[in-house]
Length: 124
Image (cartoon, rainbow, N blue to C red):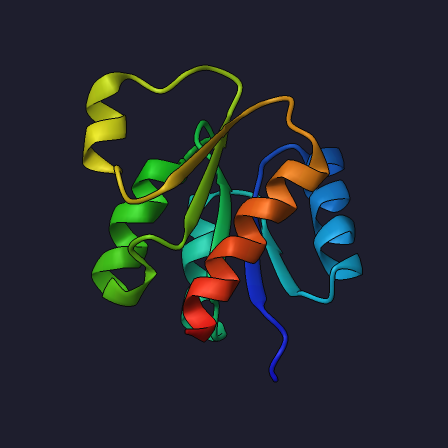
C-alpha cells in the first residue's frame, strides 16, 4: 500500500515543520509549502492525497489554494483540512462544506484523526 501523500501548507515555519514531522511519524509521505502559490506548485509536481492548509497566508491563502487546486484536480474536493486561528465566516464554511476545519491551536492527534479518516475514505 502506498503511503498517504499529504501536502502541508502553512506560513509559520515552526508549525509547518512540527506538522510535517508528526505526519511523517504516522507513515505519511509529506510535502510542504509556505503559502498557497507554493502549495499549488507542489500539487502540480506530485501525487497528493490530502491537503492540510492554513487559511490566512500571504500572498495566497488556503481558500485561494482550494479553488485553484480543485479546478486542477476535482478529486481533491473533500480532501482538505483547513486550519485557522479564527473561526471562518459562515459564507466560507458554506462554500467549503465538504472540507474539515480545525481551530488553532490544535492537538497533533486531532489533526492526525482527520488526515487518517480522509486517507481511509480514499482507500475504499
